[in-house]
Image (cartoon, rainbow, N blue to C red; front, side, top):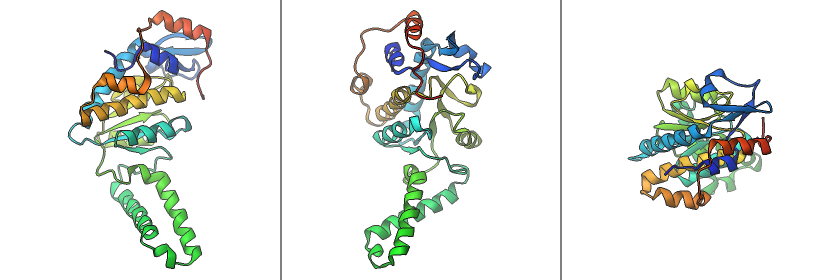
Amino acid sequence: MAVITMKQLLEAGVHFGHQTRRWNPKMKKYIFTERNGIYIIDLQKTVKLIDSAYNFVKDAAQDDGVILFVGTKKQAQDAIEEEAKRAGQFYVNHRWLGGTLTNWDTIQKRIKRLKEIKAMAEDGTFDVLPKKEVALLIKQRERLEKFLGGIEDMPRIPDAMFIVDPRKERIAVKEARKLNIPIIAMVDTNADPDEIDVKIPSNDDAIRAVRLITSKMADAVIEAHQGEDQEKLTEKSFGETEKTDSIEDIVEAVEGKNNTKDAE
């Protein structure tokens, strides 16, 4: 049984790529057709590749594996944080700080500072400091939490990374490749798939598409850690579907509604 059905992908708008003038020729093999100036992703391939990605993440998460979820674009921020937390994993959903992985020791110093300020707020230190100094510390804490809160308790460099929109997260991709960290990513029709180890051809601009696929990567982690049944996870997250749609159904759906990307 597929991790995600064709019907679920269609309903989430996963099949809508970018405008034909904004494409990467390397994505040609993942494109089914073109409609009204928009590339349509081949969901039959996406279904199979999501299965591969699911199994890859599940294997990486075995034995307390660390998975880092990354997505800083507006459409991905909530899903990345919520699904990473649900899976007991780590995330970056605001700006990726250069050196987050390749300069790990320096990042750890900033995280240590974040924990120190939090401890000061909890142990009463704030009560005896001047208000102006407390205000500065609170501002510093908020900034550190925004950029580092999702990796504050990450014990080490991750064993794998799931990325939404590798074009936008090119610095994260570069760091992961330098450290030989496997990358699982949603690749839209304008992306370079050669940079990604495990590819999921997908609309990476639609909120529902990002949520659907990110949730399945979280499910993979949960199954690895808890041995939960895949069918129960699928039913819990998105409900059961009755049948798998054919590629012709995709064309019919596309011709009926061709502007469901949440952002370009």
